[in-house]
Length: 395
Image (tube, rainbow, N blue to C red; front, side, top):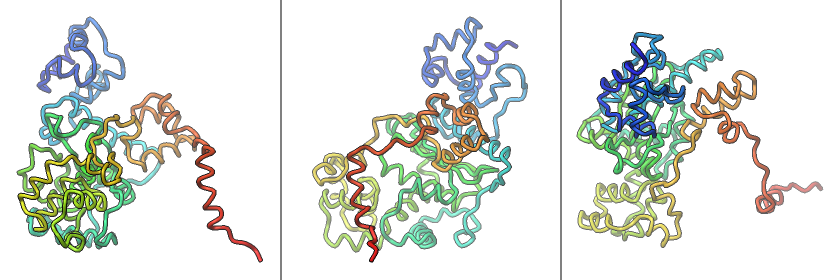
């Protein structure tokens, strides 16, 4: 069987049209057709992209390995909707985890294996009882000494607790057919990994991360779960939604700050305080009976960006980002630090690191391997005050 025949076979097996494949790979559908007829050959990069999309190995597409590599992860692709680009990005995430695990093994590092929650938080069973969500959310906060105030940056928090956070560089769920907001995967070698849609507002991403961490704590034996608007009736998803809301906005603190029915500006202040989206704050206020349903509906009509600007807050915190995620920005901070150290110590060449992260070497040198930029004159002047603040005179 020729390469073109295998490409045609795998595309049909994936139930994709030439136009959908072209859209996912950002090439004309005519080029996809040319590959399948043998009139043209895909580049090495595009062949890898096709392998990601069809969930097979590039070797099998070349006829070097007759066994398709489906990796027993079909759950992610059954629930990722019909968007080929989303399926492609989910495949990249899963393949990256395998490459990262392989690299760490080659470097002689011990891997944690399947993840499990701390024994103090482990319920020993899948939890779906919605009435338990508020209590468990506070137990998790107490375990990590978070108290009842605003939550730290969840990307940094999860990374510090051995949860690899990968940012999906896609559009907002409302603009995507699949509506994928995130996913959880208990990797057999690396343990917990979380996917978050970076095309949503920061408050929405915080909710997704809390939601996926709930899966890690209370649904970890499910192996892998993908969160999308198509699955909101799933008991696991419903429980994770309730947990995330209470984890991010504890009831006791919210009630202490809302002694009168809040205006839209008050809601925005609370959203900024708890680092959540404006809409989630409305939901939590309504759940705690601090606003009426009529108030919820009327306040929902306001623009979060407009409110933030008028209240002196950073509107970027409450809007969908317009700039795409950088090639290296999608990876967990701990991975980028480890990859840089591996290059500095000679464990990896820049080309090998670029292959690991699926970026070109030039981009890697500019984004990850470059020396820190020197402080500008303005930055240096602004920071000099700290020298004086901590200066200890000798007597």
